Length: 149
Image 1 (cartoon, rainbow, N blue to C red):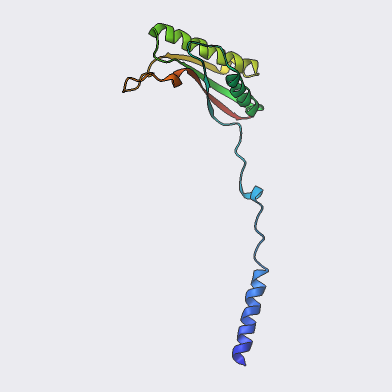
Image 2 (cartoon, one colour):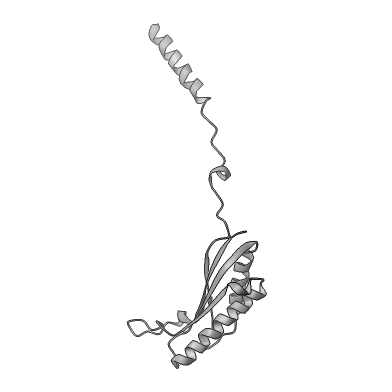
């Protein structure tokens, strides 16, 4: 009988303790939403020997501009690249024109002109150690330093 009373009391105590367990917090209370106002990096690709922006390039620029609306754009590095075809000086010129095209599109989207740093690399590093030309070099890399206002 004493054993039954002890087990009943113990069971009642355990069950009573369950009601004191705090409620599981909502996910929104414990998971922070990342700020869109942070460093972003994206690439804009070009056709061979072209510095004109394609529709996908304009979409990538527009998407990033929209994501960073309301942010303080501190610095924008635009780095133009080219593949290893042709003359090195022409590739540097093409890289520069690509960087300018991207920067102009970002300024048109409302980004601050003084924040831009343009760089043209040309075909430097475009050929792999196996001697393969890298078409992926036909691009502009954009690195944005942004912070909340």
